[in-house]
Image (cartoon, rainbow, N blue to C red; front, top):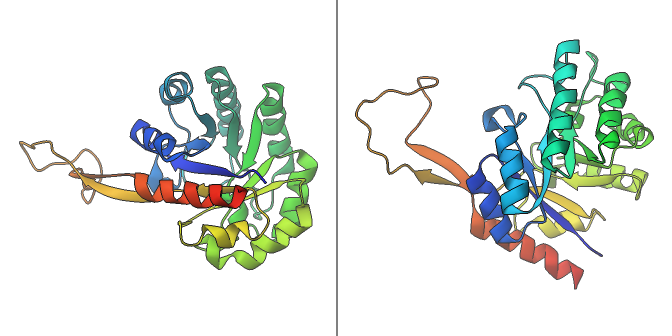
Length: 249
């Protein structure tokens, strides 16, 4: 059985590390504090053209909830087309109603645009806040979504094993269930035992800036630390990829 390791990335440094680690696909995002929003066209274009790895692009116009205005949906349509022009393989989005259920009309509209441009569609972790997960996955199948990114409605994927197993059994091969959140080289096999074929990872390390500062001021919030940054942990990501590959043999 073939497996896919997707790595969540926010910078070109992340992407390069993910490729070096042997990842099969990267999810490109901006704004990690919000859980991911739409990245720049320049980043998407560069990764596809120069780095050469399959790309799934987050389509999320802002942080916060997943109920979008008509203007925001128009922007999401434009961003889907942008991702296609840049050569992305997939787009990642989720639209909910005020009651927390899937917004079938809005999702159908965005999925149609994606499919028109030959893109795969991943529904993101908006699923993890819905009150009726089984209804949600049934609707995703009917809409023609390719995969679902989820932690099983728990803070970590290994805590959501019961729901992950239940929805995997329910959908079979009709929808790829892709577990996410704090997947490590030590627990990835637990997730693969569910019968899933894809996993989504982000394992990071903190790097201290070497830049000298002439004044102790920051560009963002007062408590934002500009003297450090977070990047993909190359070695742990490599260990995850190796653990997954061993399952293929």
